[in-house]
Image 1: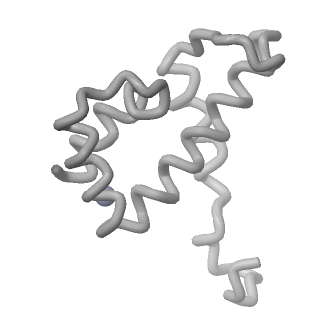
Image 2 (image 1 turned 180 degrees about the horizontal axis):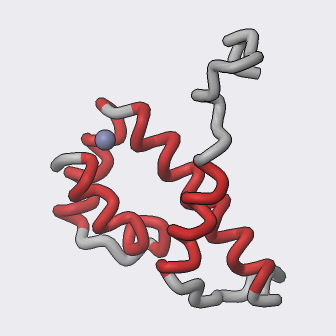
Length: 92
Ligand SMILES: [Zn+2]
């Protein structure tokens, strides 16, 4: 599985709907690819933000449009720790 393929399955993965066979491949990729682990964490956070925006952040199941999640991801990843100007590089 490539990083790109992984993103195609991320919604199913987070919802627990992923086919067991695919899920095994998915988990294996995560073991080898810290970038995708970070990406999933960001994705999860974005879904939470989306649920708050939709007014259903009380733990009840809620469909957040994938487009919205991606939009939030784009907005938040733009100012991630990769910025080199003025940073000390300690990551924190
Ligand atoms: Zn990856």
